[in-house]
Image 1: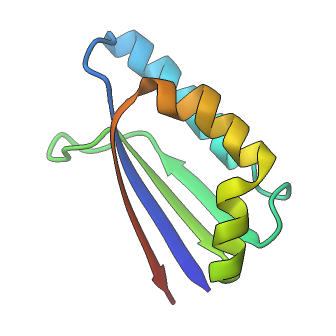
Image 2: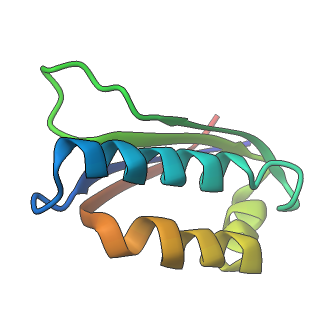
Length: 100
């Protein structure tokens, strides 16, 4: 199995209220992929970091295999969420994938 973890920082130009709405959209969009993307076993988006954090959101997902991760990356439902709810609003992205 593969753990797929991403940390994002939102663009600074957004107000606190706008950031809350953006986070909600990202969470709903990504968590809504469960059951739609083959091999995606678990997916959670954490939108409430502690003040000691230096990012705004975290994706924590579990996939069946590296092949499933590759399929997830190009799956039309994932690409749609990424292009409409994530990429337009984020300033930085850090990713770590690892076998468990």
